[in-house]
Length: 380
Image 1 (cartoon, rainbow, N blue to C red):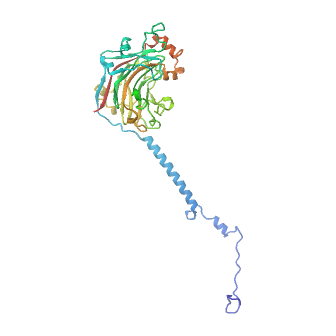
Image 2: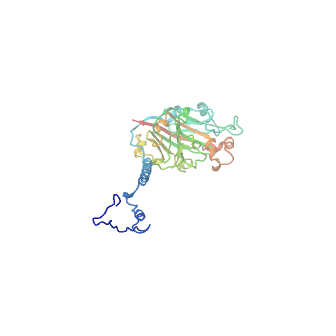
Image 3: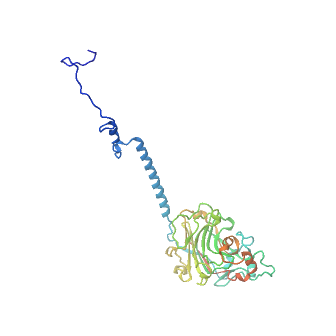
């Protein structure tokens, strides 16, 4: 007997039944047992499966947060709650032009004009006022044979208010808007000495016959955008980037429609433009002559009760207070210039702009502003 061998008490080694293992792949085999593990049961998942699920969950959470932030951004809107305004300044009557400086010299917008000083503007009858109206005109007396002639530009006017503003509610009674082939009139706010750092607010602007309607636009330095933010307005938005360095200084504009400038609005007696400029944003309204709110006539304007604005520039993605400041009211009538040149092919105007301006003075008899008064309100 070998050491360690077990011997039954009867002297014979124990007998064992032969164990038969099933062939590979047969029912009951180890391989089949492994492949039949239920994949959907987390109890059998390995660590790398759990790691993959964790990565997927993290990605889903990141996407959900990003979508939530984007949606929240789109729904953000500034607080335009009521402000009590009191009248601080009026431009009107025969002293209307006393509150303005007359810009002279080179036209920054490449216009084909000579902006004249106050004495010459009065002598040429380009600015004059009565108790109820103020007129700003382009010269229509100088022809090709005049001395001097308009071969280097036609005489015109650009006014800049002596008072500068950082906010407020502005009411502009506009009885007639200028229009003619080559005309580029504008009523706007800016700091001419610090442009574009202190911003530009275009209130009324159009070119040629004015059939494109009134354009209301902001121009700024970088970091001011209206793209993708919630806005409440009747006008049609154009470019969303207000930065002067983008899109060839197109700014972030809003079109008021084809009946908001030129013959269409002039024939209806003009309109009243209202601009509320506050930290929450800048809003503009264009009221038809018969639809001016009663609180305006009562000199207690309350924009919170007015209909939807024509243009809305909220502060959602633009710090209004830092981008727009120290602005003067500016009134001018440019001729030709950058904006006109850019739209000349579609204007329907004959010849070229400078030839018309130099040689056809009668064409500009409709190129004049006529105002009732300007009123500026400040928070009480």
